[in-house]
Length: 147
View 1: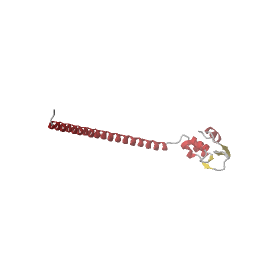
View 2: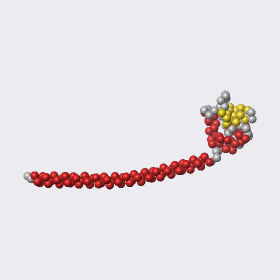
View 3: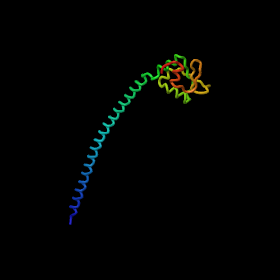
View 4: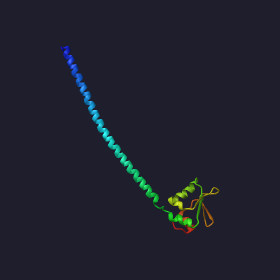
């Protein structure tokens, strides 16, 4: 049989061992937390730098693209020099389709908004009206411009 003092001594030893185990677990948890915190910080910095680099590259590409001439600049300028005028409305899908054919070069087309049209777009070349979307071949044929 175990005496009261012996039981008390064992209980104190068990409490001390449990307390030491809790303290050891806390230290391990704190060490792991600090390691994870450093890893997260490095990862976040890396993501930040990569994101910044991507944004800078996109801005450079955008500036370069906006400075680059359109594919149909010379053709569009020739149409305007020959007096060709495109009439349409900005809400019209066919007018917008004709605009998209020229892409960035559309800025050189003589374009006017006209509400009283039977069909859109309508091109006026040498006093003649040509309704609907016109191909580049047709516009070149009517004006003598090369596309």
